[in-house]
Length: 184
Image (spheres, rainbow, N blue to C red):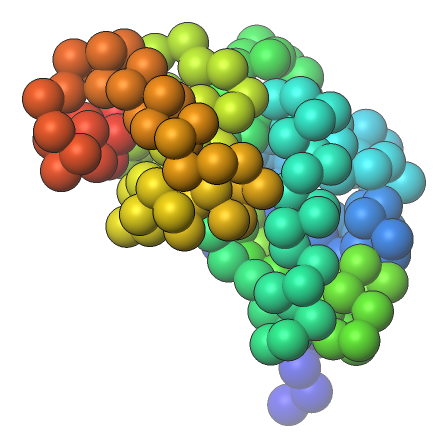
């Protein structure tokens, strides 16, 4: 029996997108459903439409490139934004994994998977773009110094954002904050 790879791509249980220069050249129905969009609304568009802000899209692209350049892959959990439909503009936690077809050119061409984590983790507090980035890295267990390096900001600035997150989530410690972020 021959494998129908196009059918497998379309029926995959996670959102999938193929990209060239950070533009979606194809996507499956699971991705469309997750972001509340049609294929026509996504194919040919920049991934920027899936981000809560243009700044987050730009900074993520800068952060991804050197990691994909070394290993060919990248994965994280981040807050994304629904494009259309009844939940238009809603933010949600998403696990994103990507593979560059050529690691020496990380954004040239790749395949990306998206898993909606909103059933396990809700975005309960209104967060700024930088707070969303710091929250994602805190959940990965990074120290303030490591987060600062990843975001090109000082560890002291990271501490300020961490303190804001702790206030918004009414957390008493970093482990408590991580627990509350995981719970939503």
